[in-house]
Amino acid sequence: QKSGRLADRDGQPIGGKKPQRSFAVSLIRLASGGIGAKFELPQEGFSRQATKLDAYYSTSIDEAQTWSKPVRITWPHSPTNSTWLIQTRGGRLVLANEYWYTQPGDRGLGVCSAFYSDDRGQTWRESGERLWVWEKGGVSQGSAEVPCIVEASDGRLLMFMRTYYQRIAQSESHDGGKTWSGVKLNNLASGNSEIYLARIPPTDDLLCIWNQASAEEIKTGFYRARLTAALSKDNGKSWQNFRTFAASPGQQKVGRITPTDPPGFLRTPMAVPTKELMRADEFHMNRAPRIAFVGDRTYVTYTHRKYRYEGSKRKAIENSRKLRVLPTAWFYGEEK
Image (tube, rainbow, N blue to C red):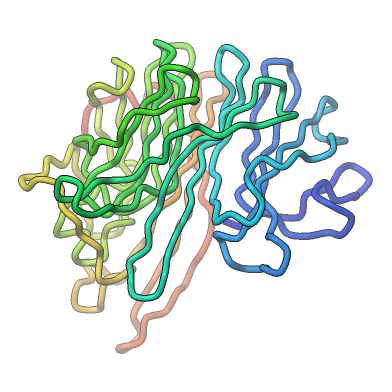
């Protein structure tokens, strides 16, 4: 996802001598009181390819007026797609990361890992494991993509990843991100869409917002339409309070979707429903949620796109970023 140009108060680019558009910016408030920023810049010779980016880290101690010299996080010339930065209670910086590999004739392979720093972002190391989905007892491999990491109240790090297997993939770390368990598919029904995990202050419950979808919805192009919110009060072992956060017109607002079939590879044949499969005059795509907490309120942003058919031709009529601000208590309400 593209962001604007990053510059300090004097207009000087943070990422180099010339202004350039950054990608996937992740800002966090550090325990020290400063601001940590992860951002990505295109690798030399690549201006658009999303998997040809380098991730950098910079800090500000004056509320973003000036920034430290950026430090490279990821390996140069690697097919990375780093996502969101966190800082653990112990002060370690941890960055979720994805590698995307592809070659002619295959469906591509997403492999996840984590980078971490114990010296305030001056140097970075990468976890030893590479995380993906094993198919058919290990006969073949499946992608794990766009990872999101949260620190649970018991100190474990929990990583959620999107897949084509109608479920969310997860792994956990007991040593702050150095090593990770093998990937398992949990019981949260999901299309191949981004997930965001966050820990709610001050309860330490976990909040997950993602595109919950049934197999039929995945098959008919509704896999990135419904955003569902759910809570875990036991550090991700179980989930409750399922609530529809956003949906497309005509799409059913449901609590929890309980799949009747075991996980299996299922790629949607279409990003937007055909005219015949539309459930209303418009189709709304709601995806890529982000969560932040301020006081007793929860701020959620997500990508919102609208489509309509004029005759037989599909037309995009809106592409925006939505912000919803809700009392955090809303997520503890009844399932619906």
